[in-house]
Length: 125
Image 1: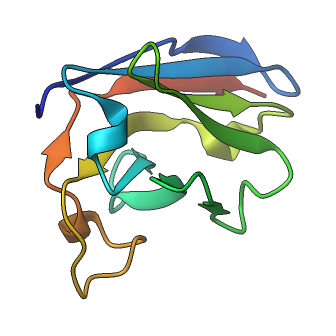
Image 2: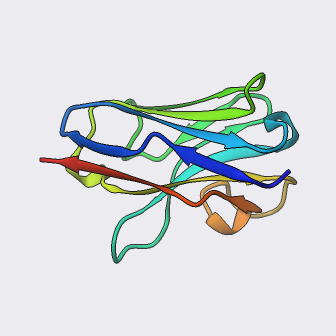
């Protein structure tokens, strides 16, 4: 448990779509929640989406209605489907996982115990 590997990033035109994948070394069901964050140059890492063990989800306002987080437990993989991409979605996207609940908000990066190495998403205007 603990290794996360993202893939699927790339260059896309505004209005296009990408699907990011996050492959976990352990069972995705073992994590209480798994999330996606992103970080643009010079900016702080920000919350994008989360999926809990019970499959409920939550999204940042900036991506609501355009991004969808999902999980395939058989493949131990979490996905982030990104549609209607905008220039401002350009960032390095990180997958994260939490192995226990705590008092930290799911939107706070410190509430996650494992991180992937990140994958670059670049949206051209």
